Image (cartoon, rainbow, N blue to C red; front, side, top):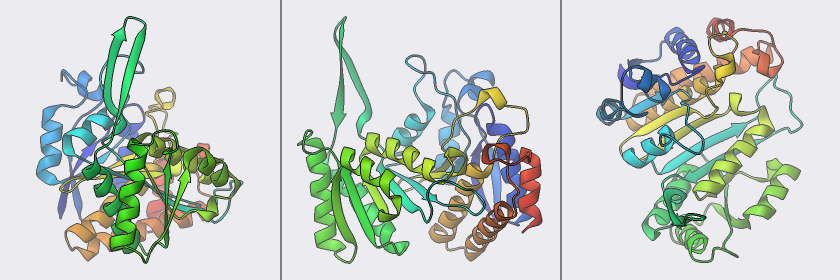
Length: 339
């Protein structure tokens, strides 16, 4: 039995977390959870910030966490929980798999893309300053070690997952130093260590046009921080939206798996939220435990859960956001029954 931290989060987070725990229990996944708070829920529990130190220490102790959506104020207030977690735990690699699901009709077919995003640098470094009262500057940061680290991680991931090609998206025609360094290191890793993986580069705006024309031409996409954030949400739209898109953040010692959608406060407590994104993230967590802790039972549980939700969707068992009628709890029950 492996111990993981569970952060239910805000809004719909607690109810989708309950649904996911029910499916994991039905699948007999060898995981027990220690529940901690982050986001507005942490403030309501009496903490003085969105990411309490005890939550961070719990993740450090157990090495792995599953996180629901957390609310972040826009333009003012507290720092993003996601950004704080990535910085504090050095979760430098964000991974967002995107694939078509049975029974979820979209205008695209045969989409199977993985977006890998450098998670700690770029404009998201948060280095902003007032130059005058009317001028603000935001600094884009790139370091060669971090560019090399994410490139090496991406090629290793592609090899383990038996992926064939990596496309690096950039704007090095304008940001010649920062994005230039990013593609230099990606090319270096490809040429020196992974010539077996097909490699290409595309300017981000041209790539955006190409990917909406035909997303099936892409396999693994590697981006710096801001581009990866935008492209991962864009690609989620190919397969049904953020409600069916899992996410994971990896460091050298810790990993946090998360639903990438928002906290949706307008439907919180109504038992209509789709728990699938968090459940899909939980299957990624099980696969990580299977690999990092050499436990085949975790991998087996992940395969069972994935087959069960694929079958449920194929049978027309869907929540309202996907055109169905099931509640959160009914959808979790439909998946559990197919285990």
